[in-house]
Structures are given as C-alpha cells and as structure tokens.
Amino acid sequence: MNERLSRQLAFIREVDKLKTIFRQTYLLDASRRENDAEHSWHITLMACLLEEHLDGKKIDLPRVIKMLLIHDVVEIDAGDTFAYDVQGHEDKFEREQQAARRIFGLLPPDQSADMMELWLEFERRETAEARYAAAMDRIQPLLHNYYTEGKAWREHQVTSDRVLERIRFLKQELPDLHALVTGLIRDAVDKGYLLP
Amino acid sequence: MNERLSRQLAFIREVDKLKTIFRQTYLLDASRRENDAEHSWHITLMACLLEEHLDGKKIDLPRVIKMLLIHDVVEIDAGDTFAYDVQGHEDKFEREQQAARRIFGLLPPDQSADMMELWLEFERRETAEARYAAAMDRIQPLLHNYYTEGKAWREHQVTSDRVLERIRFLKQELPDLHALVTGLIRDAVDKGYLLP
Image (cartoon, rainbow over all chains, first blue to last red; front, side):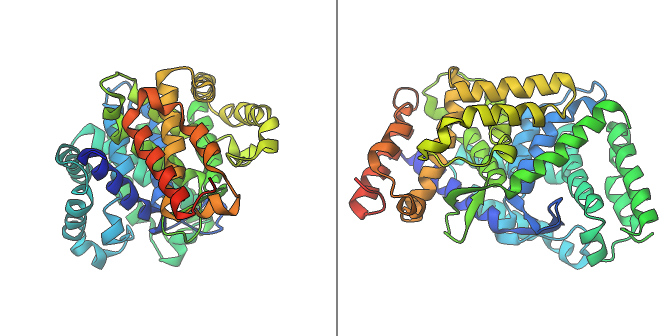
C-alpha cells in the first residue's frame, strides 16, 4: 500500500472513535444522548439546506461542509466540553489544539495542514464560512433541547440569557434563523423548559 | 415563521431518526453496531479525503457529499437491508422509493426535488459521482468488518466471493482502493474472518 493511502486509512480508522464521544444533548426522541459523529452528520446536512437564509450572501459551502465534518474530531482526545461549563472552557483550546495536532497529524502532511487550517478557521469564527458553520453547531442542540422539553437544559440548570448570548451572533447574517431560535427560547422559558 | 423554513425544520427534525436505525456493521472497537447517521458522517468524510485515488479524474465532490449525507435517509421508513440479504433486496427499491417521497417531501418543493434526484442518482450508480459515493459506502463497512475480525461477516456467514463481487466495480476507477480492499479480503479469508 502506498504511504499516502496508509496514512489516510490510519486517520479514517482513528476518527471512528468520534462515535463513542457523547454530548450532553439528547436525540429528539429523548431516548439517549447523541454522539459527536451523528451530531456532525446532522449539522452538515443542515448546512446544505439552510444556505438561502444568508439572504443572498455567497459563501463557500464545500468549505463549510468540511469544517463541520471535522470540527469535533479533537474531542476524541479532549472530550466534549458542555457549552455552559465555565471551568471546562478555561483550557479547552489548548487541550483541543494538542488533539488536533495528533489526530490530523495522522494524515499525509498536505491534508493534515488543510484539516488544521479548517479546524482553526472554525474555532476563530472570523470568516463568513466559519460563522455559518458555527450557526449550525449552535442551532441544532438548541432544537434538540427545545423538542425534548429542555432535557439537557434542565439537567444543567441553564438560564435563557446564556442561551441567548450563544446565538446572538446569528442576528445580522441569519435573521430568519435568529428569529426562529429566539422565539423557541422565549417559548421554552414560558413552558418551564429553560430557566429565565 | 415562513413556510420554507417551517418545512426545512420539519425535515431536519424527521431525519434525526436516522440515529436510531442500526446497521449490521460494528464500530471498530466492536462495542456495538453502528447507526446510519454516524455511518453517513464517516463515509462523507472519507469522500473528502480519498478523491486523489480517482487518478486525476475530475468529479463534482459537493454533489458526492450531498448524496452521501442523504443516501440512507430512506431507511427511516424502509429499515436497513443487510448487503447480503437476498430476500430483503427483492422489494428494497420500492420500499425505499416510497420512503424517499414521504421524507424528502417534507422539504420545500425545489429542495425536495433536488434530494430525490440525488438519491436516485446514488441508487442508479451511473454517474462518476454516484460510483465514487458508492465506493465509500462499500469500503467503510468492509474496513469495519476486517478490523473487527469479521464480526458481522461471521454472524451472517458471508463468503468472500460475495464481498469481492460488491467491490468489483472499484477496479477501473479506484485501482488503489480496489487493491487495498481485495488485499484485506484475501487476508480475512486466511485469518478465518471470512468464509472462502
């Protein structure tokens, strides 16, 4: 087997572990928590469907897709840090960067560098692509929380101001989706799924 | 909420069920069977990494990606049909087509038509994109079988001629990958993971 294929295969085998990294969010049927691999699939598909809500703004969708497919791979080593865990976030970036180096480093050097760049772009949220990708990554768990009657929110006593803060960046570029989720947040408070 | 977004949301919620459709193939750590959502994520990522093995042949990768993200959605209604289940394959296409109409039909009409077209293209395997997508869909479970010492193969008493038959179409367009998997199949027979 040639060296490149051998490295690609090592990476493909390694990332299978993402299927065993569980998040705080539940499936919509509330039967169990979801894992990072299925979450990544779900938000990648969402990204393919919701582009029109960028109101005509052009983005590089294939780049968004690649970002979303690999954005959580670092959690194989670093674990899932719950969005509202303040302590866990202190050294999150450092832990994840180390993980990125190890895991993407399994690939041939050019692909490893591409993946590292995509992951950093996602983390920095400075490009339109990274912000659109981040929007998918924020909206999906919010939907899951809302439609499971706030299961993970209630378990962690999350308050609405913190949820609103996390989706505030949607307002300018994705006004439809911002309106959708703020409506759900308000309704979740009314129904007791989420603390005010 | 506008009508289009409302339909998109209905589809996004519906496809969450793909996370509860389990396949015959095991995770690489053999701890459990994998589900269609995580499988779809895995092969979409593989498609992004292995394009170079098409030996310079140009394909529309974003189209492949979309195909792979939605190729198993029909199994929400139709269930997973094991690759080597002859009886299950008799009415497979009919069951799946009905499922495609219902599930993709949740989307706004233009997106529904696009998804239906992508799914049919994948099923027909006539374009270079559909064949490359199908290659990922065949290679991944084969890797999982090989690296779990033939766990699902042994459970279903699968023979090597049937596995070879399913990956034969790789030979012309993806010779490296064909060589890789035929090598694994031979080795699997030698090691007793797979019946001759």
